[in-house]
Image 1: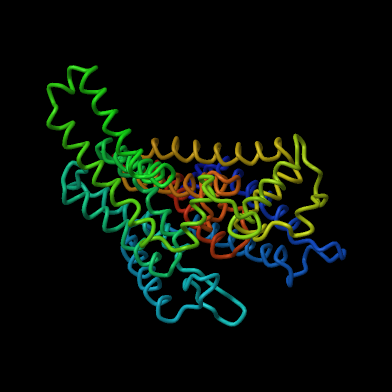
Image 2: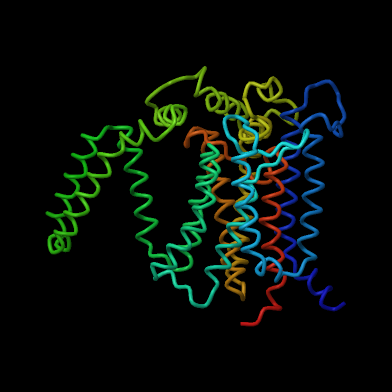
Length: 420
């Protein structure tokens, strides 16, 4: 009995409160984005806000169940969860329903479930289980390869479903690997290659190649260390030029047409305000019209006239920007930042490596979703269909993020029972 009392006392109620604040704030935004002005009840379950209310209730039930389960259950069955979710990702390729071009949904009557959402917490569990083994060492090639396989196998299956946005989320796990000892040059190299890809699309191969050559010459002339290691410098230049020469082919033949045009619109290379750029253009107008304090709850003209497509799902931030303005948007960002900082701080206080690694997995996934969703809404990232955690409309998304977070809350509450 005493153990149970201590357990409830050890729960990070501040993190729970942040979760509830985001869920309620999100539901009010969904209600505002979906309300039709016909004075219908907030419990109208034929409307999106009514359905979301049911999903919130079920999410809270899931959270309670997770908190009363033995904390060791999640580490013991981490690989089982991973295996089952991978089977579901394979099954959806064969038996799934295609929605918005992605074959990623199981349809059972009027109920739809998206397995790719649940793959996130399963991957975080499996990665934490593997990396927490005593014999793993991120300096070893075997460990890096196995960790990469755990991360990118579900990403590959999701990419096969034509759901690029969900597949991109798995790159966020690089932050977990970095925390656990992955050399810094590996994520740095990834960022450099990503930047080179974007710059080459924007300015062309010739200008980028000339810029790289000039930069290397300056390094050679100005710094003695580069003159001593001129072979390494030359090899870096040759590999960079080889990468740049492949960018155009990858852009034209690997990416889908709608992905190419979204990137071009983001870079200002094309304008299509009534086509591919319509969502982002309308989103900017909606957010900008909110001013400092917003137009008020249920008073957003663009929100209630549905000028922004997908405003209760991927573009839910527009409702916040229009109706609650800059201050309301800042409050939402503050809630997310507080949650991310809290998770990282609690992760560093864990006695078990499994809990620490899983905590960083939770923070990485939430950070990626939060950053990319807001960035694509204001035109700083291509539109890729990334929901805002705990906020966007959708049962699969809400449940998966709830499971993801509350498994960590459970691990954190149990940390005093873990021996060093």
